[in-house]
Length: 268
Image (cartoon, rainbow, N blue to C red):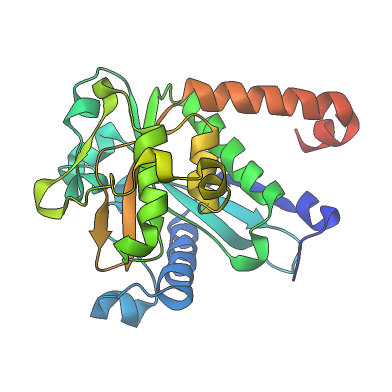
């Protein structure tokens, strides 16, 4: 199935409103991470056919909902974890991979993004824009100043990934005051190919869409990559100053409203 504009009219984004909806989001995550890709589930995750962990009970869950069928269907999700709830667990999820001290000590309000996934049939630009608008609204509502999280390449072959890792290192390394670093025991050097040997435009064009989206919003990258053996991925840490997101999407939707005011008003 491919989405047409009529289908898109029936899709909304909001926070999950019940334990049942959170479980549906976890089922979606299982479908994408463990069935579509090659993550390795624990026995409990495999038996329940849901991707879940200790952070889920403390996070907000942004969901994309398709209302076009006889029952509403969750087709995309993002896990949103603020600092206070993370402290109830004892740390942010990303701290298993990165030393977050530069962010934890910078004095800004923080939001960790994670567990991003969308069903294959819904991986269209309009749906991704809607998902990002939901994040922008959440950021504004909660006065978030910096958001961060691990973004993944679905490969653990560092040689294969070397153009991408090198490009991110040379062109998008975070400023020193925000530059988190992969923990020593898991650190993978990203400075593999010299900058002068990279075709930056070509590499950027073939980056995973999610990472490319972060960069377009002004996102920067922590130092070092990490191989996640459970999810069979190579991760980089993305840091975004959120005023870039809210400004970008405010301008985008102002332009959209000017062009299609009746349709935009109907959705308000």
